[in-house]
Length: 320
Image 1: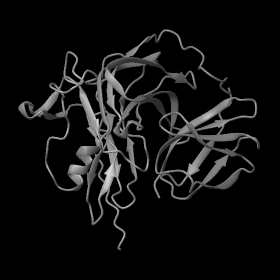
Image 2 (image 1 turned 90 degrees about the vertical axis):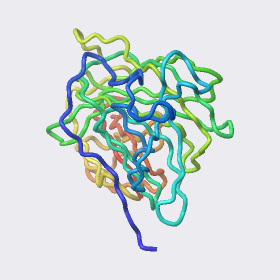
Image 3 (image 1 turned 30 degrees about the vertical axis):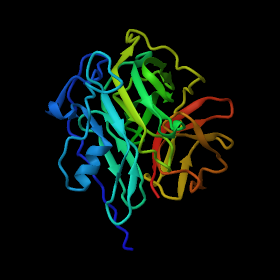
């Protein structure tokens, strides 16, 4: 079969400004479409189902405001669900993904079922936590969902994004809407310039469960105080910036790591749930690393010294 790579992406335009600590449409109250159908498009969010519709050349209302759903509180909520479609000859399952920011992108490869996302919205605050409500029905009772937030800043010297802070909520079945508040873990005292919130209905890769349904509402940040810049949580941060470069990005079955860090330092790869999935010990200034054991997706990576000091962070996409 001829290999066809189809990419759906939206150009990242100039960011607008938002009030301090605000998540654009974090309460999911602004929608477009036909309200009577129960399916409308959610402003300031990008969803994987919209990408699928664009890829297939279909118009359609693919987001549900759930005003009459089983997980109903006091206002419309966002429903995120997985979907199966047939881009070529074989059906492909894609997890339900919602990414904050009107100009964010979600890319799907219909041949490999790989997907990636990027973007976010402008954000310069340092909140303590992300809070909100969720309701979840796990397909087969074993699936899990996730809500994660990544604060980052563009590094003009290394031409890459540095991760400033992350928070991850792993979700199992909930009989009704439940409140949550997750502490952000900071890696550096630098203020961010971008916030990206990612909501996923299924994390059972590659066996995506089409019956899992995730509902999210009233997302907001708490504990914003920009008058001081507290020390990062977790480990100490090095005062000397260490260079670290991983390429190609996106990567296939192998990557090359270049760094001026001391031998014995570690590069730790984490999935969007914050779980460490691979650790590489540096043995040279440039070394090739086999990543064929890592599933397709988006990963955060951190360079950690032998003393436990976090030197630098970044993000890489595996797309085989």
